[in-house]
Image (cartoon, rainbow, N blue to C red; front, side, top):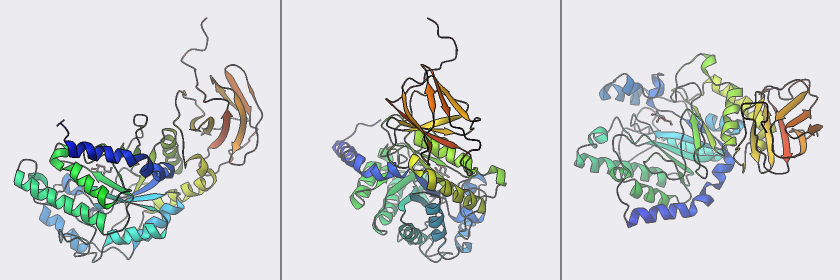
Length: 421
Ligand code: GLC
């Protein structure tokens, strides 16, 4: 890694200084909607279709004129996001295909000048505001359309032009739409370092224009949060992270049989895993070319939202990471201080038994109704007589137990059953 100069060091220091304050709402929000929408939606074969099928630029460009989305579909996305219990959105303003979804002065290959005939980013921002959602912009650094997008790897003049173009676009996005909450860079091919991308300067400009903004880690700088993709894994302690997940294996609109869409239970399980690791979940929808939401997504997200209306307090807000707990066949944990929530995904008869806990239980309640549950606890067995015949939750079929301990518990089970003296 190149040695950092004064400018770079100061940039990192000043971003660090405000990080806790800037990130507070985001940590508490937990759940956001990713929206992948662009020319590729018309082909319905994943947003990488141009690259995967080697579609010549000239042929692909024709899609810019045939794209005729219906009026204001972003309102439907925002409405659904709200109903689903999501607190923020991130939309692709420019994906790898290079088409700009806003009215740009930098290039005519944009939504206002071509088929759609209007600024789709503006519509999106307005919809987020209308529904009280925080606003995120996705921006792909990689560009398959711009003549310097690949050439910049070796040709220094091309690089200079491409960096100017990139920073010009980012500047427009950060200047023309009021307050932005998230900048979500993606793929930084083909340049190999933040110096080649001029990322320090670019992000310093972003922060000057948008002092409260949160930036992801894909401009080859760590910035504010990590972005595990299509898997959920907590980053090192102290580092913010957000898992981004597709709904059916494709980010852009692509038909898939209903079984390939994540079920309500799967979505809630993802949300639980993120919560347990102190991370966020950014779940994607890929609207159809006209902007409408695939019905599988609507149906599932609506139920997720109904579930969150009852159980939201377990998910949102300040949570703590779950550590030192072992696997159980009946469920898993989330935690807030000394209170643990046991998400019982396979409720067992009328009694729940948990082995190996190191701390004393103070109270057991069913969540959210708060009904106290009788329990006994010996040195290594906690037995809760919940007496439930059916799972109280008809949406996710997961019973949640709120267990308050004397101190933060650990669980020690290991592999054997006999304690060797
Ligand atoms: C990958 C893909 C891209 C998608 C992104 C979302 O980087 O290249 O198509 O937008 O993941 O995280």
